[in-house]
Each structure stands twice: as C-alpha cells, then as structure tokens.
Length: 113
Image (tube, rainbow, N blue to C red; front, side, top):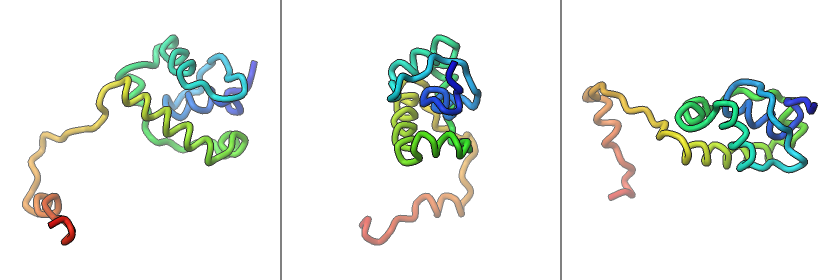
C-alpha cells in the first residue's frame, strides 16, 4: 500500500481532516471527486468535513515531494468544494460589538465614498 504521506489523496485527506486515513491512493494525479467520495465512505462528509477543513501545519517532506505550489492550488480547490458541499463554516458571534469594535467595522477607506 502507498504511504499516505507521499500520496496526493493521503496528504490532501490529512489537510482537510487532520487524520492520516487509509484511502485508495491517487493514481498519479489527484482526483478530487474520487477523494471526496472516498472520504464520505469513511465518514468524512458534509458538516463534519467542512468543520474539520481548517488550515493546519503540513509535513514539509510530503508537500515538497508533491510540489508546494501545485499542492497549495489543489488544496485550495478541495477546500472550496468542501465548503460547497458542507455547512457554511462562518461563525457568527451572538456577542454585541462594543463601541470601538463598531467604529472599526464602520471604518471605510476614503475611496469607498
């Protein structure tokens, strides 16, 4: 079996779940549709996956082996798809803003009119 730390799907799965999962390896290029289906098959889908898909520290060796710029681009697309399939992960606070926070929220650059 392929080492998940040197396989596109293994590293991408870790990037969005935080766990090293045993998934079928990518055959060369990453297939995000297949990866999302494989993740769903092991219980990572919807709200659970959207909540877990936060930025995390990645193993340098794995990212370097896959190509850092390409990895970042593929991961960005994966996170976009996860947010599209899962819950809206923006958090809304019930706390009211204090006057200083309200002033900062209302502050706009001069060119905004």
